[in-house]
Every structure is written in C-alpha cells, then in structure tokens.
Image 1: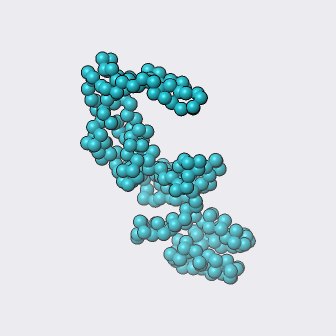
Image 2: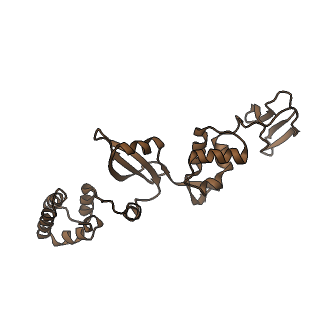
Length: 264
C-alpha cells in the first residue's frame, strides 16, 4: 500500500522477520509463534520508514497478491485484456507488473468457484482457457470447429470440454478447453445463439451409442444410420432414412426427435 519494498530475513515456522529493503531505513517487523496459544505475536514493531523511497518495481508484488487485491474487479470484468489490466494497475496502484504476472493474476481470479463452501473454503466449480497462441493459430486452420467432452476420473471429477480445429496437416489443433461440473448442457442452444447461420454437424458414433442405450441395437439399424450419415444428397439421405423406417418404426421416430436430424 505504501509502495515500499521489504525483505524477509527470517520466515519459518517459529519466526518471521521483515525489514525494509533499503539498508538505512529502520522499518522492521518481527513475529514469533506462540505454541501455547497457537498464534503469532508481534515482538518488534518499528513502523516508520526513513531514508527510503517509493518504488514501482516491487519484487514482493506477485500474481497471487495482485489477484487477491483485484479480485472483485477482475470477476466483474471477465473480458479484461492483459494490457488493459496492466495500465489499470499502474494508474491505480502505481507499481509495474510484468505481462506474464498480470496474465497469471487474471487467470487465477477468472476461475469460477461454487457458492457452496467446504470447511469455510471456496470450492472449485469451473474454468475456461483459451491461449493467445492457439487463438491466433486457428486463423490459419480450416474453418471447422469440433466440440467434444470426456469425464475426468480424478478427485474433483467433472467434465473436460474441448474445442479443436484442423490444421494444414489434417491434424487436430486445440483451440480452447474448459473444466466444468456437468455435461455439455445447453451446447446446442449456445451454438444457435452465438454462431447464427453456421452449419452444424454431429458425431454419428455418439449418436449411435445413444441409439443403443435407447434399445436399438441391431446391426441393420447401425448400417442404415451410417448410410444416411454418408449420404451426399438430400435424396440419398431420405432414401437411407426410409430404409431405417422399414427396419424399425420406433428407431425412425426416435431419430427424428433429435436436433441432429431436424436440420435436414
């Protein structure tokens, strides 16, 4: 707050000694841990600076401190760019931060936490990451975005959602990814609202898996579904669906209720 740079001379489990980094300045604070009361107590306090100057290049200012200091402002400006954030820090707090430190501070506070707390602590809920390099790299990829998700079989659980493109070597190119608490609920609605006029296609393998779960397990139904998916004209597509209808009327009705088919 005073823009003075300090230095830790001792910092362990029993003692913490902090002094002003300017050798001639008398400012210093020493704390000792009291085992009986299980708390820290101030043993020396010289709370007056003398002979030192304020500095904008403060080595004690790191991404964690900045994230905590600007917590509310960052969460209220989720679209904040790194350069704009750096300018705001310099104007309001008068210290210089590296671009990497500013980016780390933004990332730390853009992680969504749950409204429910566990043992008085905030719980991780979800987060979204899109690196600048991948965002710029996608400009040179084919204009196709693939969306998929998988279960995270770890302590926190949840889902890993990814957005990938196809580069010039016909290889997958990661664009962005997110860790969320539930399945890709609302994905179709989100695409319709943010990507208006863009053609959507769906993974036939996942669609067939859902058909099997619904009870349509015959190989003939699978073959008819893939024939429809590989159709290159509307007439061929309609013919393939008619074959599926002849095989199983209920499978045809089930498939017709899906948003994947309604676009045709």
